[in-house]
Image 1 (cartoon, one colour):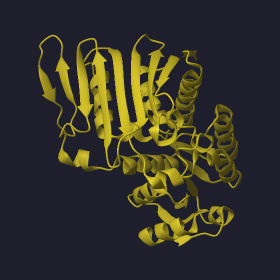
Image 2: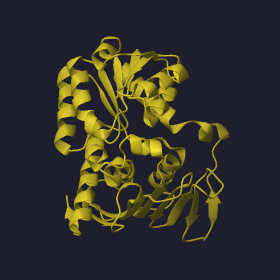
Image 3: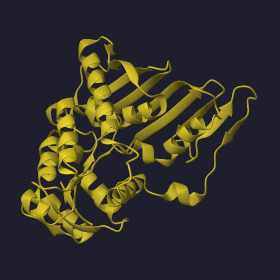
Length: 325
């Protein structure tokens, strides 16, 4: 199948590299930033299309790697041309836009995949498997951390402009909200506490989620570190033990400890499993499902629900009150 990239920024580069690991034919890209597009084209030996309409004519799949406020319009145009859509998460800026994207693709008979890739990182994936296999009992508390800085290029790409990105709780934390739902199920209440008096690169938020089945989650997201510093972590606290992982702990493998015995061990996997690019794994999965008709592991509805939680988190941040979903 033939694939076209819409956009030429950071995620366009990441997705283009991921498509190279599939059997798809990467045709080219279209972008409002010609300089960036030419750089992307040279990097991957692809064509720069003069317009989105021209790109649509040449491909079977459109991969939308644009600022979030453009996802809705571009996905509807792709659906009208009966092209499958891969869309970098979050799905859209509003729930209504997300619903219209899903409906348009359904009516056109094409697939819509929302790339919320946290599920494809091996540490996160294995940690969930340890929970599901009963190694630490039932989920009690989940803690997720992802705090970083963003480059000047990220500023150019609109991450700091809430009208284009939705701010940190939509642009960045939606991916973590999706992972939290993957473990805990339906979210019934959200409460956030932001760092006061900052926006743009100084944004920092803590969000508390309560799940329908009883557990809770604490999520931490921020654009506050100095350039080059990135830290992510997870703790899954169960009734019988804990799974933990830290990006700066010096090991790719999560550790789990059992409350009853006090024993702790690292969960080891073959080296090849850790060396795989999670973005490549995600695109490979999307491509295989589009070709075969199999269901996606992350459905468009999952993307919509993660956005719903993010929008509730933003509302709580603005009002200072918890939001019931």
